[in-house]
Length: 290
Image 1 (cartoon, rainbow, N blue to C red):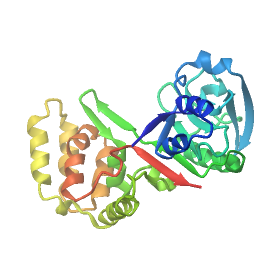
Image 2 (image 1 turned 120 degrees about the vertical axis):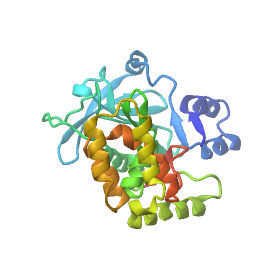
Image 3 (image 1 turned 180 degrees about the vertical axis):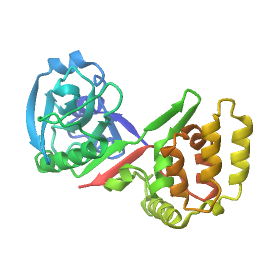
């Protein structure tokens, strides 16, 4: 995966507007980032405006623009000084960069984004509105694809963390973004291989049962013996959920629904590997053709 800084590329473009090397560099970029993106004061000084967009309900986008790019964002309490729940970066130079980059999709913690009428926006709505909004401006800016990175994780405790791309593959056969049509960005000339792997993960999910995880009983025993902070309730739930053969997705979901996150964090990658899944999100980069 190749990360490129938009402003470095644009500076090169200004110095050498006819250089073929610039086009080659851009074509190798999987993901764009901006140097100033975390500096709100610098973003504001370039000039900003607010625009209304409707996707089932009215949404307010903050549009921050400079000479070469536009940042569209939905912010907490519709205030540009608040955390962004959704951030989209678009190059204003049509044909220079042919994809938009989604930098942020989040509505957790201190971020609380709402519609114009006060309805809270969840993650599913945010990604759908991002796709819809980018499609509405694709002709204006020559956008052919959407790129993003999937680095989401769930912290169960200070000692147990789950990569959500792997958890969602166990639950649904693909990553969360995959359910919206996003696919892993392949290495050069490797598209067929990565899609074969991706589709094989979906097929594994369709038939995977707990009986296929031959060492599951050992994993359970090891966790119970070695986990210092296991509660009586967690122990009881683990043993109850594990006592019969069932789809792996149901097994994992029931454990998560019953607050056994630490146990899932201990076993989920082991189950993933034992069933023959392949991590298609290890480079974190995904694209969607539009």
